[in-house]
Length: 355
Image (cartoon, rainbow, N blue to C red; front, side):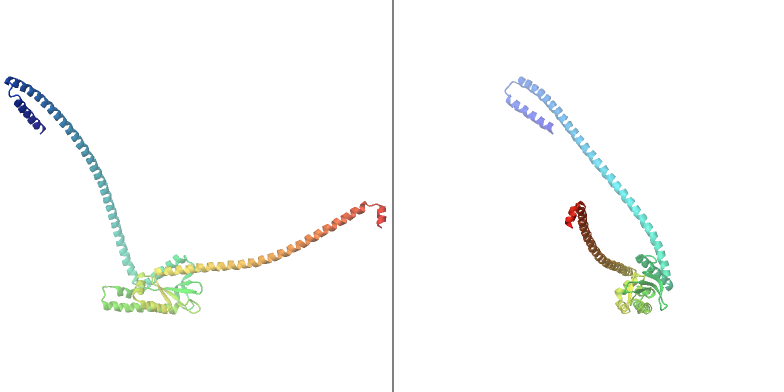
């Protein structure tokens, strides 16, 4: 484009020169035009060379910049790709690890399902449920008060009326001995909460469940609350949290009935809380008892100290009396000494005069 412009300018200059020198002779014009053409050709050639060189330099510089930019972009792309690849590998490894854990958990769930089925089979038997409740109660007592702490509780304790309580808690007065007995009314509870049963069947199971609970409350109240021997209250332990929650949430009449009979219904969680409170009471009473002992001993020590002070005052007065007597004896001794000295220094004449 620049070359065309230059050519046009040259042609225009030639036309101007021709018009200016049209009166000159043709030979001069031809000669001058020839020289001008040669000069213009050289200038045009020089300009073309400079222009080509400048274009080449610009092109090379631009090419270098583009290449540097492309290299930078390529490095960043490679870095990003490596980072993303590393993150992808980590994510994939994490997914594999979680899949492995899920697989292990699934296996544990399968084993647990088998154990639950086995446990359900065990709990269908009343005797097995009784043993389960007694063992659970034993573990709770051991966890709260320590294993085989006979001063605080005893398992399978026989009362004077020949009844055997699952556990007797020797609480401090005014509570006294508190009986804890485990009960597990399961069959009718399961029928009551089973959604597959009809509404009428579930109502019937509910009535039976209430009768079971009331019977357990009556048995505990009549067997384990003995006037002047045990506390006027007892505890019924339900080893299943679900049954305890069902009673307290939907059967308030059973809770009120247990209050009237002085029987407190507990679950594993609430029994632990109750025993923990009793444990704190026992510790406070023991501490108060020792504090009373210390107070009595301090009072006795105060009496002895008063007696000591009295005797010390008496001894001090005696010491003062003895000290006074010693001073008097010392004065008398001084007088006697001086008397003997004066006697030993006088002569016979002086004695006669004295006589």
